[in-house]
Image 1: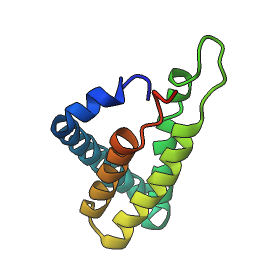
Image 2: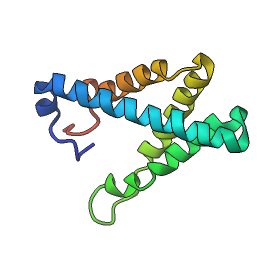
Image 3: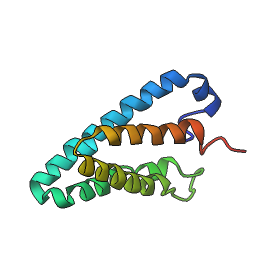
Length: 125
């Protein structure tokens, strides 16, 4: 979160942040719950493809543990990969249950908005 900058600056540019969040949420859902899940379904079946896609989504976030650690030699921060696993399971389950990506895109965008704009986890003193 520290890489995003001061929350007050983000909040002063809310429409631009909302547009960026919408684009990112749409892109991630198209890739992970759309393309990756379908590619996996072709190989392992639809029953477990969405779960495997969520695991891969979490693994893709593992390198961020190093970027988010506190200072030189600080402890690794597993929050993002763990959150990505939970969110990937939720949004993948939504795609499977609804048979389309739109509900997951909306949920993803609202989650990102909440984390970035409403309840920022950085810059707290």
